[in-house]
Length: 123
Image 1 (cartoon, rainbow, N blue to C red):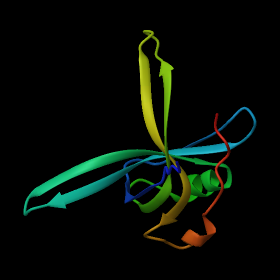
Image 2: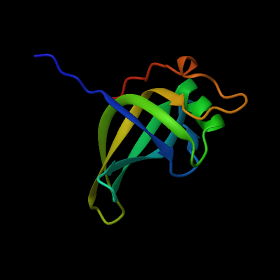
Image 3: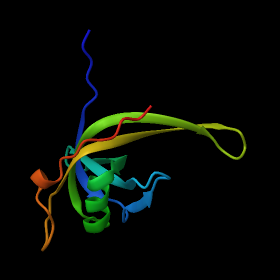
């Protein structure tokens, strides 16, 4: 049976992105996106997504994104787990981005078509 893991979100960054390098020298940029949902006259809810970008896409996002900026993100969900200092198992579901479009481009911001990259295989 075929399967599909595809997510699309559009919202605003809640903080500046964080960029780091892996031991192999691959760039990783992480950021959180707030997606607001409104219904009725006075009802609103915000869902937060943790987004991870890799390699060239990570470099571009780390350079051009900042808190409050609007983005469209397309990718897949991945849940990872680890043990904290107290030996409690923790889980985090992240959106592994394959495409990021800046919705409020300024000078020098690349267009969305320039930001569609392959994501490395994760075990």
